[in-house]
Image (cartoon, rainbow, N blue to C red; front, side):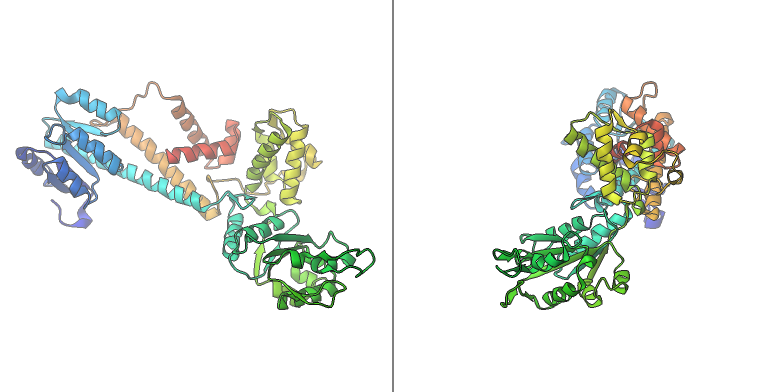
Length: 509
């Protein structure tokens, strides 16, 4: 047994109820670089494995109380990454093959054995265990990675690194009572952000009131916010509650704040600072507890310079800022959104459309979408209505956008293609690509080992399951496309989301 941990290649456990066999095994293993444990029963083996990490277990087949098959079946349940081997006689081959087929046993060593054959079989087992452990680690890493990366969040759809930052900001800001300023181009989802902040807040049971300051005439805006009393102005035939009253105990969202009259902004500032207000035409002061969220599609500092936004109001509201990136900067989210909208509108319109053509997917990815998510949603809706199916073509989308397919804007990609299943950032994409390549290479190497090395359960290479052939074809396509899943999907004439789901299913299998 090796005492130096640095010199140990792996931990082995031999189980045999005959002491003379244990002594023979000790002689065979004394000059190896393995840390080796020896026990005489299945119960001892299980007890030892609770205290030590064991990479490979080699057990006799016939033992009293607990047979080798029963022991290794239990180990396969408790420690699935441990490689399990039996020492068997030729007369036990039927039992061994049954255990192998059931997945309880990885391989076998026939009695009698010589030292060289034993060491060779163990070396192969240790190599396989390292591949299995690496694959298990990869699966756990990818599972954790996927859990961390949200594709859908509080009404948003998209898994780009840009949107992950938005999701994180919303989760951090939501529990606070601090005011929030949301910026971003039209169509990027500012009201969705405000709703998410409210839904995740401590006041989520309270009301959420939204006012679009650009949609209400300036002479009516004060009444819209603060309410009015009967007779306050022409047409005020009764008392009316404003947003300040309606949003008490909840959230007031003021969209397009820079469109509010500059004089009314001073009253809003006082309301935010004091929590008190007066209805139009009233002398009585009222109070409300409200969380304020505002948004603008203009650059706030530019609006301040243009005298459209009070500087003191901006800084009072901009305690927490959330910026929504335009769709053209959200790496490959356009395609994920398009597929979601396709399902939504095919169901609504009762159309038998199953997906996008590869050229249509390229158009979705390469177009700049100046109107952002709103424009994309409307374009997909139009394409669904006007298409006869079964695929949405690039011409359908071009017609919806009223552009020509030879438009120079479509020649250069507006976003980079995916290089991994999630592509959260260039660094993350590289990580996932490398780990996927490692997984593929290890599986291929393991298959070669299993097919050609002695003492290992062989793989039937004559006839492969259809699912296995499909997996090989997809891996080959991704390899030839240098990890570009979108391009590989185009060559295979399937949707990229189909490949993502299949890759995910392999990792979770």
